[in-house]
Image 1 (cartoon, helix red, strand yellow):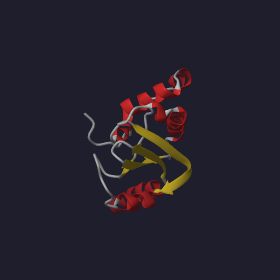
Image 2 (image 1 turned 90 degrees about the horizontal axis):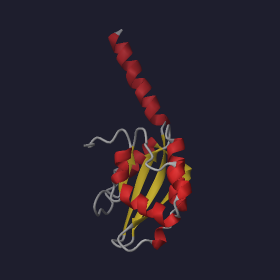
Image 3 (image 1 turned 30 degrees about the horizontal axis):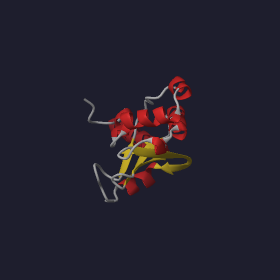
Length: 148
């Protein structure tokens, strides 16, 4: 009975893992000529990631001075976890961190709809840089293991 329960738990975990989908967030630091791809867990985070995408879409990254990042998201293409895992094994070029990063768990969007509606594109772009610059986005996911 114990082995059957353990098998069922493992089987349930694997089926949930296989069912998770991911979307891509691209960050570019033109000053350092770096591009980073973040695979964000879509499953269970749809509302929060749509809000983040709205903030990014309204951002005027071109107005920021050199040394800041710009971002874009692709919410139309959903990737399976197995594809994301395979891609994250690639040892691509690195700068401050790995080129490909997988972010899992519950996403807590640091932007509110009220902020997005009340700020202009420059301010949203500045806030994005303050909140996410250099791989910080992974800290907004519950599975991030190095929280302080």
